[in-house]
Length: 202
Image (cartoon, rainbow, N blue to C red; front, side, top):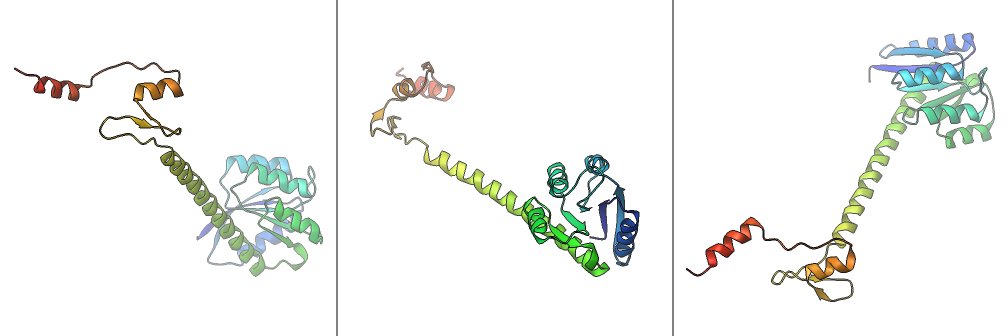
């Protein structure tokens, strides 16, 4: 990962400058950085670009606190969100993570190394979460297939009757009549027709 697309959502120009400066400390990493000074602008940019990470201040001119996190995560559920805030509140930090943020950093203790590690860890945690979700989806589909297989009806290889749930052997026509509104039409497929014609006495 040699380049990261970053959205900084921050209304304080001094904090934006500091974040940019901290990011530039990592010489072997390049950043494509975009900025938003309010939530409305942030959402507009999120809908336009595919960001690797969102650095989000909790308090913006048009949104404050956990509502800011909720709205950003709702718009960008696949993008890791890293909270950068001057607020020292452990309860809000915990709630922000519960809302979907990957981490919560206080600006007072922020450093270039801490910011970089937090970004990389947030991206990796989000990637692992996506993989787990994909595995769960695949597992759910596999269970559905198993359920369908378990529901396959046993058919006699000789007379082609179906063994139903009531432990009775039924002709296919009778089974269809009992379990659906479909009409059974008696037909002979081409292969069977050829076989019947071949077996007819001369």
